[in-house]
Amino acid sequence: MKILLVDGTVFGEKTGAILRQVEQYIQEFNKELELEILYFADLQHQILDGSPLNDDMKKMIQKFEEADGYIIATPIYQASIPGVLKNALDMINPKAMRYKPVSMVANGGTYQHHLVVENQLRPILDYFRCLVTPNYVYTHASHFDKENNIIDDAILQRLRELARVFVQYCKLSEPLLKEQVDKD
Ligand SMILES: Cc1cc2nc3c(=O)[nH]c(=O)nc-3n(C[C@H](O)[C@H](O)[C@H](O)COP(=O)(O)O)c2cc1C
Image (tube, rainbow, N blue to C red; front, side, top):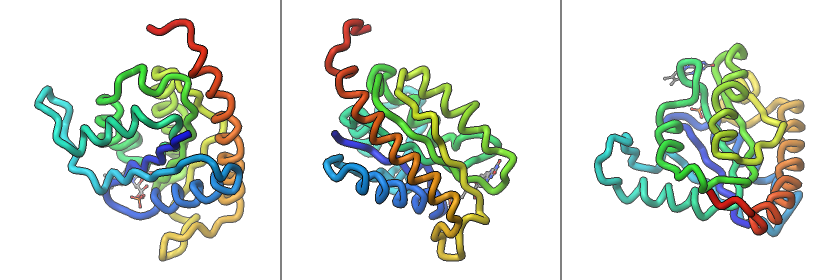
């Protein structure tokens, strides 16, 4: 199975640091999963306004479509997910992520915005009919050192548990994807 780890930040390093930690934990639980990190900071983003899509956006859509599961990592911007992440999800066919496992991780400058994950990102993924794990992890600047290494043991444990549950959801999704009756 191909797992796409999406780093939804276009500025900093913390969201990527969480994602690389999750990548490591997933590998520990299942070495056979094929993992790829997609850094949004590397892409030439384009607003979905009806214009023809550029090569980066086409490549991004293809990666979403070909993946069998996702880890979505997002920073918090203005008490929400970044526009660039919402814009990217707007480009994905609503059936492309159906019954595929997803785990969410987020990072914010304030603790007060942890429910953005639960109240804003999860409903979008529910619309896609993803298998969203019950676990998600929200981190804060205080969980990192100056080099953006995660230094909080509780966060590391939660990320490890998230990876464990995600790997089980990957197994659960395989028969669901193969034996789908309703194709609409
Ligand atoms: C435009 C912008 C808006 C932000 N708004 C919020 C916010 O509303 N709530 C919050 O907790 N953090 C906010 N932050 C802080 C970011 O969430 C934080 O710096 C980011 O998660 C760091 O991750 P990164 O190093 O991967 O970019 C904002 C940052 C930027 C750049």
